[in-house]
Image (cartoon, rainbow, N blue to C red; front, side):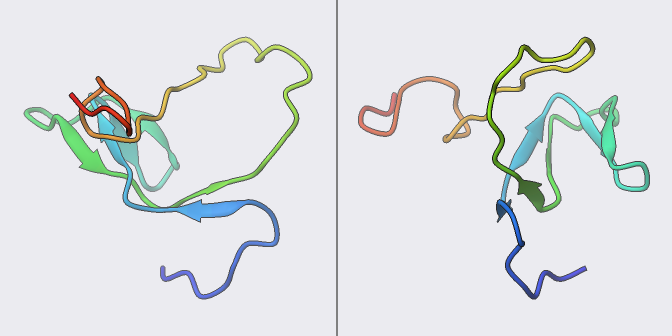
Amino acid sequence: KEITQYPKEGVYVGGMFLEGGGWDPELCCLQEPNPMELTLMMPVIQFKPSENKKKAGKGIYPCPVYYYPVRTGSRERPS
């Protein structure tokens, strides 16, 4: 569906890709990738700010998000 309003909290982020995994749109969760599918476009995700007061719970993976599609270099000095 199309987003027509700003979120009450946080921000919507679109245009992200998932590498080496799949996305189940019905269950809204990660899954194994389809054969021969290396990357896929993720749906729009709402990020909500929170304070990091305690360690992540068991079974939670702190996933890195990269600014560029290649995982090396930086904004100031791309490789």
